[in-house]
Image (cartoon, rainbow, N blue to C red; front, top):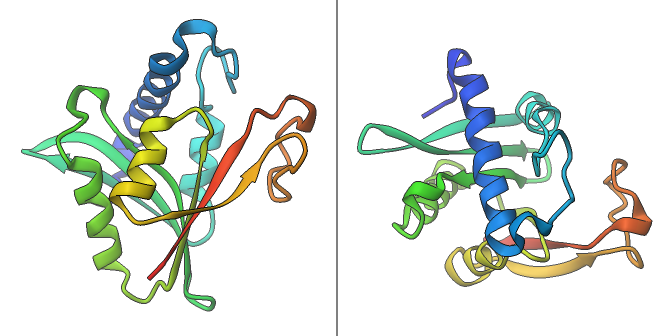
Length: 169
């Protein structure tokens, strides 16, 4: 479902919960790569994704319950799409919800010829999801020796790494 304005702040909180779960599940509280006040992803980062030109934001709903969300950004001129954010509540992981949501996004946008996304190197669950379930390929590894030229916010000396994925339709 398209994100409703009165659900925006809960969407942000749910996104933060899901991202924090992913990081602490892997590292426990040893991961100190917080963007804001103990959060892996900041409210500002999420708001910027939602508000970006060309962005579409959706709630993932299963059995009448809001269980996740997606932010995509489309460029009809180049027929490319960026998967900016995809999250599923940790309470409903491993039920195929994220995969079903991704399939719905692809069906909604058959005009998109190439999809891209990124995820941190340590997010084994995400890497499995994008590569083995959704058919993306790892095409680049951003790190301190090869920084992401589009990420102005990262400190290159402290970059632990992000994989860039691409799916050619």
